Length: 80
Image (cartoon, rainbow, N blue to C red):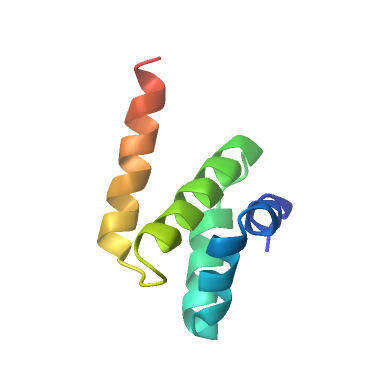
């Protein structure tokens, strides 16, 4: 797990609790999704979107929605 994801989970207690309740397979998948880029800024962004998703979905992972939320986050930053 990257430092970025670890730190976001440390700071977001509710998201961390939901993450810990996931199966090890889902945890690995989400870690890979969040950490498979070299740019640390993108890893931070993905970690934040991931934790917000877990809180919003109350621990249920909807990968289609998660990817849509990431796209929205990226588009929102381009408009600035």
